[in-house]
Length: 238
Image (cartoon, rainbow, N blue to C red; front, side, top):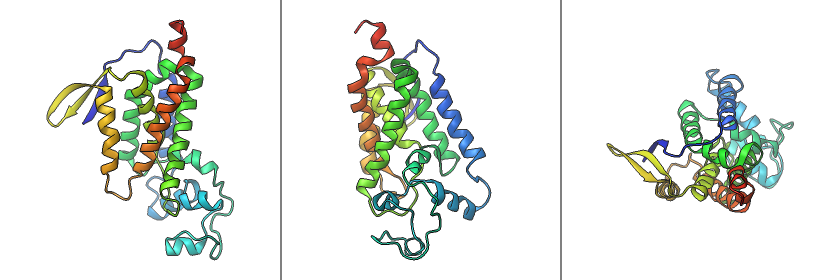
């Protein structure tokens, strides 16, 4: 199923959701070397993106690891990017995307589900949920693939966290989605639940489904913990 919109009005403007979408778009078109050639694009990702092996070993990849496409316990040869902030790359990776389709898909889901989550949590807790879910998604990927030397990029883990939050906050709110040739309203519980379980059926090694799973779970758990502090919860006197 592909979502068109949710049928869940908000009370406040989705300022931060719009800002996050704008930030991802600006990064893709004005910071990433989009269109500068494959070599420049790949070099940029190895320099800026999170890589499981680097996080496992606590250091940038060595030349030998890159040539062998294999993570080792001790560096092999020179380090191409010794100045790289390995742990900072966990954050920067959330704003990098492989192509326009990758970017558009993540931003579409964020636009549909993020406004209501922001409406509940407000401008302080909402980015906390978003960023922490993205971090957990990345670390979950590292846990599942500790020796991976391919850059991990995309807002998918953080966006999955937004879906997890939405699932906890609005499980019965309808989501208008295409199911085959039909446009149907389905409960968020069904739509997000199907999306979640579909991650375990992914066979493309280039799709970091582990980050999606851990990100959604993190968003759901954080929402269960922080829900009483949300703006809409306070307005109802909870």
